Length: 107
Image (cartoon, rainbow, N blue to C red; front, top):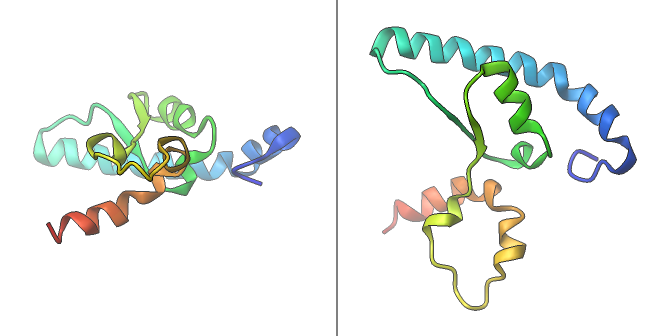
């Protein structure tokens, strides 16, 4: 339902909107600590994973954190084989970050 909410998009957004707000607040606390301790500003956030595929989740985080938020596509730095459909794999690219990271540890 989260990935294909159809006509229930408002209900789905409301259902997990407070969870996003809570998570964004936890992220803000972590950013504040990091900026205070390391004296290094956090200027943007990249989302990954299945939850990042929900349409508008980036805007929800951006509104809460007041910094640019983007869905990270780990495939943009890779060359895909001819047998791989960029459209099909692109639809799930944010879910591949752990697998791609593990693959790079073997290179």
